[in-house]
Image (cartoon, rainbow, N blue to C red; front, side, top):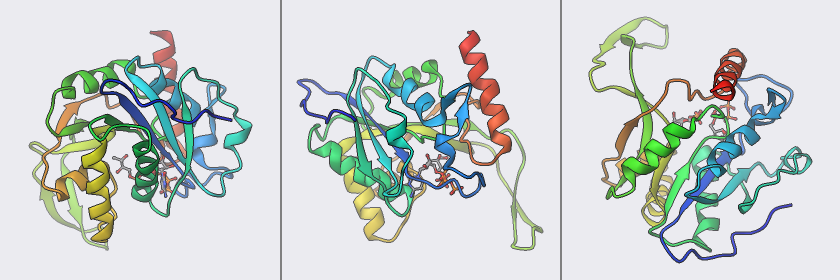
Amino acid sequence: MTSSLDTRPSSLSYWAVIPAAGIGRRMGSEIPKQYLELRGRAIILHTLDRLLAHPSVNGVVVALSRHDGWWEHLEPHYDKPVTRVEGGIERCHSVLNALHELALHADDADWVLVHDAARPCLSHSDLDKLIQTLADDEVGGLLGVPVRDTMKRAEANDRVVDTVERENLWHALTPQMFRLGPLRHALEQAIEAEQLVTDEASAMEHAGYQPRLVEGSAGNIKITRAEDLVLADFYLQQQESN
Ligand SMILES: Nc1ccn([C@@H]2O[C@H](COP(=O)(O)OP(=O)(O)OP(=O)(O)O)[C@@H](O)[C@H]2O)c(=O)n1
Ligand SMILES: C[C@](O)(CO)[C@H](O)COP(=O)(O)O
């Protein structure tokens, strides 16, 4: 099905990690959302296409559910190594499992780009901007989009309790790009502290780092609910026609 990551790179490399072990509960579809098709191709393959198309990315580790019965029917063909690992209960566990696999073959100083399988609309320009901007950064960082709307915090009864200052408030996207060693240790520490972080930057922040935000396109949406499919199809169509 896939080759393993059997080559230790001679120079610093970039590896992709794709957390794809979710069940897509909020999507409410009969199959996990990463296997729904957009423009005739499974969402997860659109995502892999984008990461593996970048010349700096050496290979990818995909974290899949133990119960995943769809991957083997995709038979993706790439000229770069695609390795499968078992995902975990939460996204952070899936990512950490992928990092442990990567650590068998890559250097601690190598860059890792963690990108949601559910974000197929990542543009090449955004991925390249992230890689170029952070290539010499001491910490790493993530794609993000500054908040445009006024933000409210509510109580459980949906009553507003606060208006959140939106100055310097960003939406965190993916890829999130950090060096393998520090990210693996930060995630291990976060999980050990029962901080089940929802993104890699949170783990790095808990470890005392300040990740850098790199502005990306708002079109890099995470397909979460059914209505997101129409928007994602539009963005993919726009990319095809460019
Ligand atoms: N235990 C988990 C949970 C999520 N993910 C992945 O993390 C990404 C972002 O998570 P989300 O959008 O929340 O996906 P799901 O968890 O599948 O969605 P839901 O919360 O609606 O079930 C997705 O590509 C998902 O497959 C994962 O690898 N392992
Ligand atoms: C990583 C992420 O996509 C950044 O916005 C987000 O945190 C994933 O959260 P989810 O609850 O797993 O969708």
